[in-house]
Amino acid sequence: MKKNIHPDYIGCKITCLCGNEFETRATMPEIKVDICSSCHPFFTGKQKLVDTAGRVERFQKRYKDYRKQIDKPQE
Ligand SMILES: [Zn+2]
Image 1 (cartoon, rainbow, N blue to C red):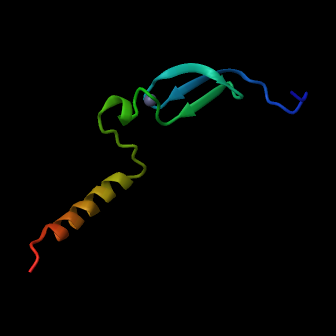
Image 2 (image 1 turned 180 degrees about the horizontal axis):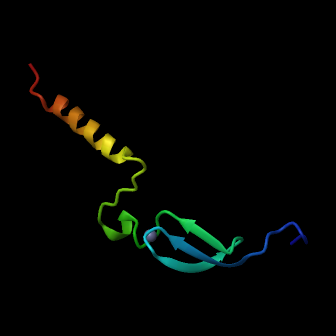
Image 3 (image 1 turned 90 degrees about the vertical axis):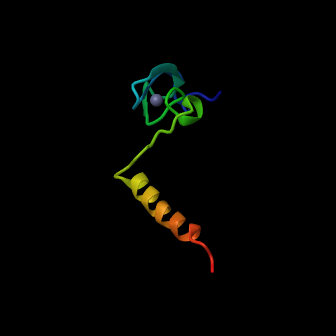
């Protein structure tokens, strides 16, 4: 490896919004994440809304209206 161009690969503490913390190695001593393996729906099997300013809610409302429209019997 070339000297002085590589960042240090150090121990890193990952902190998730769900409160989970774990150690790994990275070039930064601390990383904050929104979602991790203990709160991601793929691993929990539950639905988790990663909601930003009600965007999910708005989508669900719009989607419901959309379903209503296409569920209408066709003539
Ligand atoms: Zn998490």
